[in-house]
Image (cartoon, rainbow, N blue to C red; front, side):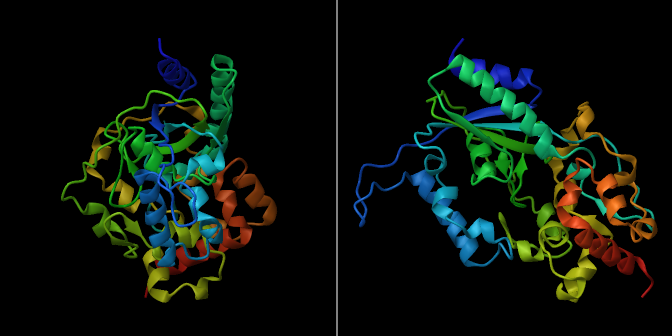
Length: 329
């Protein structure tokens, strides 16, 4: 069995639902104006796409995304000598349905259970240890979401799926319900075939967005996105334009609307992963009760949960917006 297949096998044995490998193209040999080698066409494409998005200010207040975009677009600047990216995915669809009767808020599916950063992190640490045992001379590092890596682009290159018009990864097997992680390694591994875009003429996700955040196919203006407004944005409620506040509706942490309508979700099967099963309150958040949340309550409710990212202040802001949106006009 090849080393690449051994690594794929180890990843699946650790509980990942999807795994693929992309080769990091070496830098070109032609010298640029500064005398440095020019990047490959693929890496240039990643950088140009990121730079265009940042220049449009679509990242809003997420200043870290604008820091050193060249490094974010090139894994060799993150891990010198990087030759391959191993992308992994974990299915977080549980088959449960949120109780959206009046008085309840809505939380994005990925946040119903334990923080996926922690769940994937444990598995990725183990995967790196196994890679080291298989190839002691190699160097590897892993990331989950927060690293300087364009994870969805590399996941598509590794064959896990394709980037849909909502800018999220879509899997032919798991639909829109994969959380992603990646291992950067100096090993030159046999790559998988890149995923092909199967969106076709479908535009359901664009039409479903309550705030018009998908400004064109494959491009999201985070400043209008409910996930950004309820998680990353730290301003007060009244600093959010009224039309966007109304668009938030009863959503109090993230938004699944563009994912829910994807036709590929009809084939999704429920995960049995215990860590990702929903906590009872995340399926039916009582807005009246949550409006009285103390700091102690918040720490208890969000223990090992990604919802803690909002901090208590942002959590209460989101609850209040959701409550006001459910009040009669």
